[in-house]
Image 1 (cartoon, helix red, strand yellow):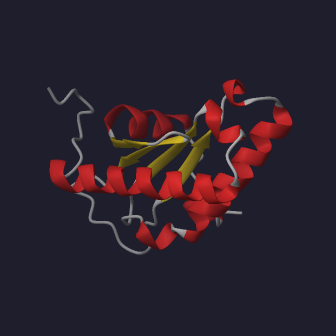
Image 2: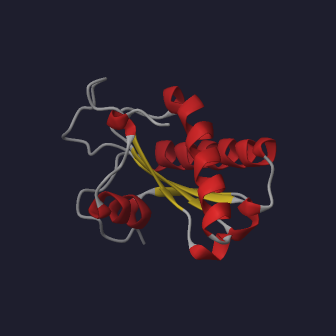
Amino acid sequence: MLPARHRMRHGDEFARAIRSGSRGSSRHVVVHLLPASPPHDPTPADPARVGFVVSKAVGGAVQRNRVRRRLREIVRARLSELPDGALVVVRALPSSAAADFAELSDAVGRSLGMAIGKAARTGPARRDGGSRG
């Protein structure tokens, strides 16, 4: 279980992270990462917040809940890797239902690394949420 201060709870946070964040993907997951806005200096009091999207395409309720529990545990172990104040959305792809824990963990690690790297290269997040190109 993720600590309450690390949970994303509002739909607008999910939408901002997905629309404006950097993306890293693998066979089983897509990770969207939106760093803290420039005028807002993140502090340890502003931890990264994480949300999960597991659609019905992944499977029935049992499969979706199993994937969500696994993803929560994987991300909980990697919270220290996340930038302070960042919004992170982990979206499970249909193949994640058939993946074992180790495969899913590797996929999240790769995707998270890609998203963090892209966010570092593109610089601070844009406040207007507009397109980049």
